[in-house]
Length: 422
Ligand SMILES: Cc1cc2nc3c(=O)[nH]c(=O)nc-3n(C[C@H](O)[C@H](O)[C@H](O)COP(=O)(O)OP(=O)(O)OC[C@H]3O[C@@H](n4cnc5c(N)ncnc54)[C@H](O)[C@@H]3O)c2cc1C
Image 1: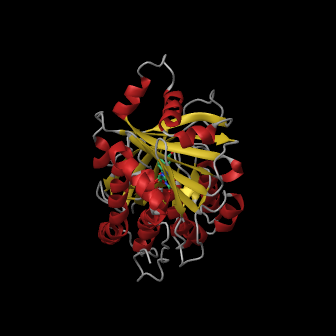
Image 2: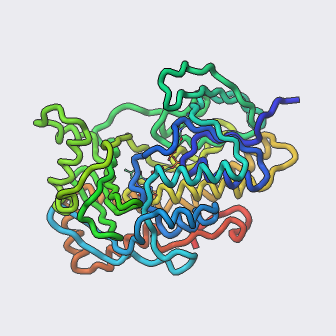
Image 3: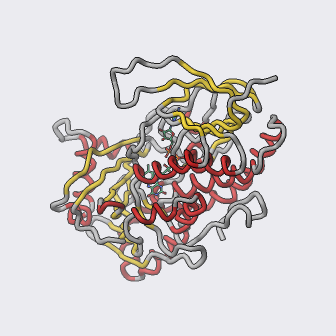
């Protein structure tokens, strides 16, 4: 008989991995979740959750805790260029239980989800890094290595193995995938001038209005800022590699964070005003480059969710929603545990999941692409700001098209397997 330590092994405890683990454990699966970082940990992210995301978090059972901690409701959206700021009402979600989104730090959100996974019986191995996946669908072998926690003097642990029937890849998009998991979106690592590199920092005592979410239209990039939990303001942006290189010329070896902050202030007066007298909390973090698109399947039988499968321009702030939604779609496709978890069962689930995923994510990926192009080119962004100042409803409509006023149908109501926008 084949050895099996766990039914489902999930790699990575971001929103995708932790939420999928919670859903599967509740459906009766024995789940093991491996995460390489010690929590709480920060992350490059704009940290905005739309109304649909709040609904998905409610389904997981941590909505109340999250709302007690999160920043104010995001009721206004903006389009900020060098000298202009268009302001409009954020469209309210008229279905579901939340009208507006909120913002919350990833250190808090991801910890809430991981603790929930622990409570529902998921086995958590942390900090440990999955290094390789071998075997076949129904009988995978995962190799992982425990990492030292806070104690750097701890000796490196030996490689351990765990046997699992299914493997769910939720490792995100910033790390190389473990050996044995193809990831065509991430294989190509050559540097291109148009690559988008992502940055984020938190500030205290900014002059940004609570509940206001301006999109920053930057030549060669885009960004956003918002007040999140504990009164801190999150600023996140993506900049083209060649733009960053230009910004660095003439600086005296300043770090990328300092260069990015100076660029944001000089290319958007609204940012300079918001940060006047503010205090940065911690360093600028960076990741990248972004690898955009949707690829739900890779190696045979390995199921992918979250950023490992889908990445849209973060300008529309829907990444966490898509991570949670892809996890819900996959859990819906797997449903309750069958008597035999074999290749046929897994490939059937994979097909259902891919079909539902394409339906659910294609529009947002395309609309995000369109918005990103409009924001990154001054010749488009500035005239758009003039139009939006004149007709703020155009900006409200753009936010609506990004999914800000939509709710998601819980899987049970959505014909058993799909999890679509209402
Ligand atoms: C600049 C920027 C701004 C953004 N702003 C927003 C926003 O405002 N709102 C929004 O909804 N989304 C936003 N996003 C997108 C959002 O951050 C992602 O979509 C989201 O983090 C995806 O979640 P995930 O669980 O798939 O991956 P991640 O959150 O990346 O989690 C993956 C986890 O896997 C772990 N891991 C990786 N490799 C291994 C391994 N081998 N073994 C064990 N563990 C491993 C990592 O440590 C990590 O914890 C933004 C992204 C960027 C870049």
